[in-house]
Length: 184
Image 1 (tube, helix red, strand yellow):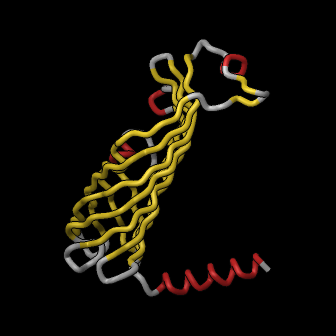
Image 2 (cartoon, one colour):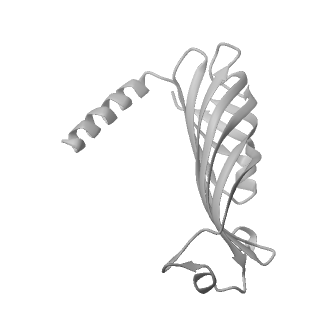
Image 3 (spheres, rainbow, N blue to C red):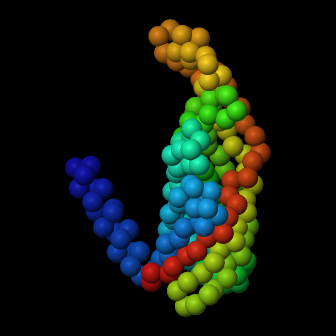
């Protein structure tokens, strides 16, 4: 029964999406930093859109690092035309990471939310450049230890390795230059 309900909802969403403007994008700034990204944006109103971006990397520049994340976002366009001119957005971010930096290992996850501001430049009928920057509150929970330590034996609490660092910080949630192609 659940599968049938899920299929019906998915079919309804696809039927609705056919009548809307849809764009796919990649953030060239993240791509240049060897963190490939792909995103999609769907117009949901006269002045608004929703989007989802996925990003990740594995050992860029030979550094020991792995990041996987996603960023949903709702945008309001001030020009009255979605995917054009100035916008403000509310977004979230979720990521899993395992980074070794200057002899220290950071292995954990982070979630957060924030505001994004930007400008979309139309290069042609279907091609846009999206300049954006955002700031938000990020909560993290991670295992943090020195590379030479044995995390399993040093931080073992009842046969399970627990996170030993958690907190929050105000950080950039999005900074980039995206190239978008409008499919419909």
